[in-house]
Length: 77
Image (cartoon, rainbow, N blue to C red; front, side, top):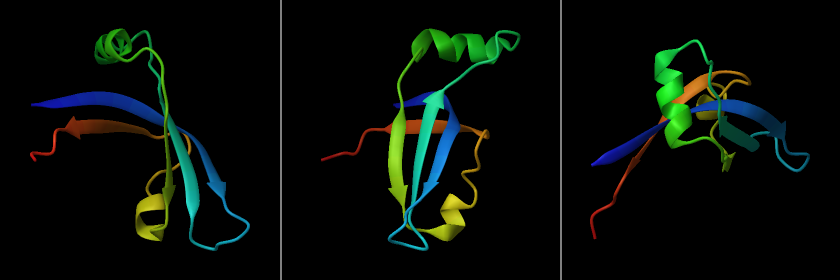
């Protein structure tokens, strides 16, 4: 079973030591007028995901302000 959360890109930082690495931080955000967002806010009211991405194709899609679904699926042993 998977757990789904809705996150927004809060920051994209370039690294002075690399032309390709980006530190990307996402946080749960919601619009009180959107029922789906109200449900997500109940389940994930706060938190953050920060990751270092060294793949320009991927980091170019993670644009500041965009929203993404994040799915957590258990890895079988």
